[in-house]
Length: 565
Image (tube, rainbow, N blue to C red; front, side):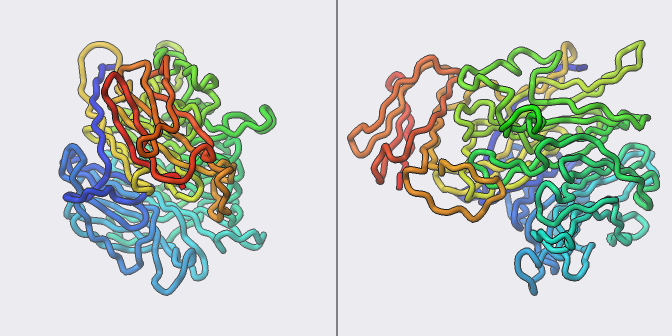
């Protein structure tokens, strides 16, 4: 894939400078200043914005963002090549209640590197809800729309309604250099509406990729399908909705273990050559081909530059031709690797638009399926010399997370998206779970890329366990729909303890649970693969009380205090 790249992955947890506690939040969006790659901004649910000038991403300060329209969730942040910072989010009308206070989309910009923001709004229609904005910047040198900002979102007639009289639709608006900060009159670009249930039948997840010729390519999901439309006049007019790909099982991924809600909405980008890459996740098999199949895969579809043709869906999280053996080695503890969970992808181009990288949440390392990592792969559109045939080359699947995170159960919202940006370095933000504090936190990773002259191009991730670690969480042993929020309390017999233990460079260790000086559980793990194990125990095996979990290896140990109700 060109010049070889080596990388070092730096990890941190989002916390305010001087604080001992991580920031509580989810659904991060991260943006790096192209002019100063050490300056990074991040937006976090529901109304937090922070800034850092620390290259290690460990020191952060709060940015005051308090628009008159209110600020409540779904932040999307980007920094333009000129340093202007853009932020889109939901409103919070002070006169309304949830979900009625989401009555418009708020769009903010900062011309002082994120120190202060000014806001405008778009999309207000009395009595209707405006949800999940995405936006794209046209910064291509020769584009007729250079300097424009393009915004898309979903409108609900009545959020959550099952009435056939209520529906959803995709709206589009643009702001140009000529009209300043305001937006032109919005347009509905979806030819067919969806239902208003906020489920697979709803039209949602709309976002735009801009190609260097200024053409807009919009994608969204509705009724188990990824839809596509385009505009060749910078958003003034649009074509007919076109089928892009099947999304088996729809965008709402149900029954993902230990997770309130998971989605597989499509995300689109364009490279500098005009290839449009759309990533999404879907059920691993067609409903008609494998009864009971519930797991997900990450897919990509390509619209080739200079053509109206699309590729068929390409699976990114499975072994493909050219991938190294290490990328898809079967884990004996997870013998059916293809049937593990991979979902919620995010895609980004490098600052020069030459390269494409995809990251997603992935449970391949978890035998129980209750712990997740973030994996990723570089994508490249390749043309076969002499025949003109093009195909999507998928790089090695690499792990970006330092350690696996617990999926804490259906009562904890972990967000719908991960954040990804690529200027000088590749920067990732995703929601993890702090078991000691019992709340979601933002995990950060920076892949410091260094180029070499010889060999294949390769971005290296985390290849092994980094340091000894323990994690324990008690979760309901029930299968709930992933968008369920009203969960009945279960007795102790319906709960399980999930444990993750890891120690670098070893193939055996001992794990104990102690109550005072009494060891109530002990097990020697042998032939440990990659220095880690995860397993489950029934909660009824232990009486309520305070415990100490201890991981031992050759006279050394690490411990974690836990309380079992």
